[in-house]
Figure (cartoon, rainbow, N blue to C red):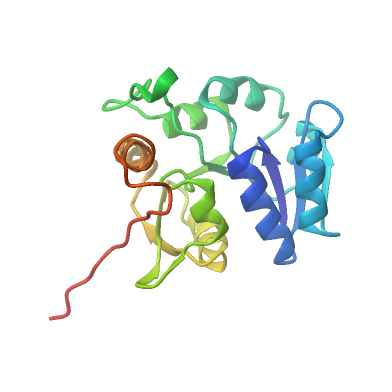
Length: 212
């Protein structure tokens, strides 16, 4: 599969590197010459990864991962070119500065705003509820970490579920894209527990099922 990464920081770098090592063709987008950090990611990712412009990543990929900071998301999508028919994984959380809360919520969500900015794309919210360290290795002694996803296109969701599962998560369908209104506050719970309330970053969530 051809995957474009828009936002090659901790989340984009980790996921893109892992998908490349799994054999996918990955383009890490950059506005300038690759940074030292991106060159390290490319070296670790192997021969199926390369860098290019945002427009190249969009044009040459079937699936895109949006992993920019919230304040950069709209401009990144505006520079992306034609997104019609592309599967767009939205991993962005609309965080206020200083982790003071969410910039949007309740009556809309970051995911829904991304869908408006990315006209024609099939947006699936995913990879926003744990840190990049868990994305690097979602295995725990008690099983796999959960990764919830939501979206309005069944085929796009199936594709994203496959990309989630292959990284070792348990992919869990949370419903339509409006469910981003609850997944984004859920992400803030992980962030606050990990960074503010002493739990540390090596935590994740699981869905427990009682047998009848």
